[in-house]
Length: 336
Image 1 (spheres, one colour):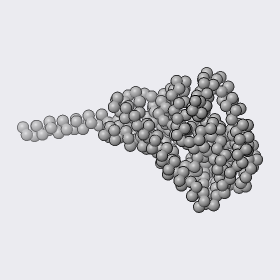
Image 2 (tube, rainbow, N blue to C red):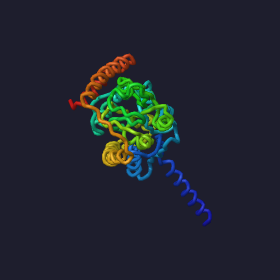
Image 3 (cartoon, helix red, strand yellow):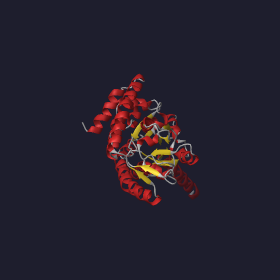
Image 4 (cartoon, rainbow, N blue to C red):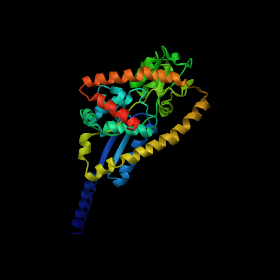
């Protein structure tokens, strides 16, 4: 009789264990490279979600183990994983609405403003519908400072020095470089160091954290301090069906953690990443090039207006409210 009751008790314990496991929710998150400033908001939101749900909802972060960076949006669309990060410029045709944020010389001068502008665009119904084609819901941006260029060989001490130079640059940054006579080449971040070492490109446009993370600073001979042609927009998205399948408590834990994760990310980038950049340039003896303000203003006047107008015309033809999206960016940047 005792054995019978013991068997029942063990069976109940096992059943309870399985129920506990069934109740837990695990999401797979597809990133790339390695943990760095660029991914700190994802790491932070995973920490917050786990804490708020007492470990019942966890985000399993993978750096390249689930998909290549240019395939993350496709993976989201088919539910291969529940959360991912990607950059708009990697496949502008798949996410044309958010490429407005990659136009050159928009005048964004801080990570805080980049975050604000990105979220204004992400919340626009046309943008949400654009990403919905991929079963994707925009969760949060990855604010980055203005890009600048490291390179090897003759330093372009005047803007004319970029003429004929092969430069890794995507999106609107590529348009700005082309206006200088450079030859912009689009490639993912993970391909850049090899391309630079082999001479495929002579210079690379990145934010400081990426120059450090992907090694382009290791052999660099010069750096532009104030070219500031623009930045890239790299959202974090979630699979819409997976989001809908969460319990109310899990969904609240995730969505309610975005602001705190973004605040942490911005502080981390401003206080830790940028604090390392200047000393690293000095340590490596990298020449720092600062261009005349009038020359930069002339470049901006030459590039910004035509690039914006072309973007508006091209995306109006796609059926997007392109002028409205551009005006939203401009008004958010100006604070009006």
